[in-house]
Image (cartoon, rainbow, N blue to C red; front, top):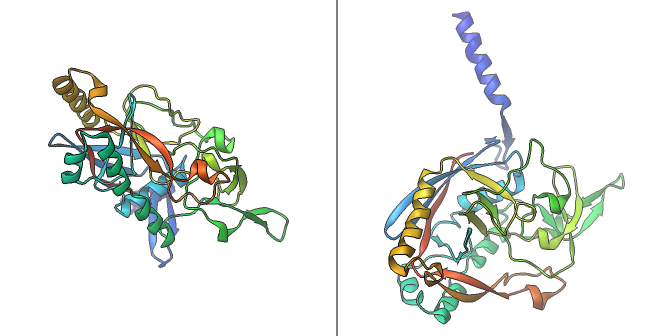
Length: 314
């Protein structure tokens, strides 16, 4: 009996080594694993697809934490794929309204109006202003008593740092994630600004970096091909499919729909429209170029919907 009890204790201690314990503001203990999991429920053409992802907190802690916070705040529930690219579907920025989408989706001008009216930027900024998003990007710095540069808490920005080599100039331990079919990437629209910010790769480290690479908010991309123009050197790949089956079914359903309804011509599946993005941009040194800039979307006529994003393992 003593041997069995010792074995049980040893197993518990071994499991504990693989996870991180943190104490929240309320004093409650929470458990954070190296690899949380998320379940995204997609809906297309009347059918739902539950797809499970493994998130890589051990490599990309800021990006994963940001994604989890937005998912827990339900910002991602009831959104739509707004840009259908050949190898990437971009989402995270616009809510889905069934009636309005149905009446607007066949018109270029009406879809532009749709995006203007269904942007998630207001909801995102509300979360930031309420202090519900963890900070990792700052507009200024200061020095501690030992002449070490540290971030200025008062200059926190509503963005998340880009955890990729071209930005912070460091390799991720144990090998970085590479872009592959089904992966999730934090996404942002390019900026012209040359302004610098201060980011925190680790708890005790503050470094200067380009704002244009640290301006991500709520957008993310789903890679649907084996390659992508949005590579891991500029867009953080932070999650992989746990199983490809349901994602395959979703991608096949969209492709079959295009085949059956548009003769296999993908360009007939969407309308090329425009919308203003980054309307709350307030840090750039090129306000006119970066704030509310117009971006072209390949907006699907038949909506690809994200019903829910749920964190199933922390």
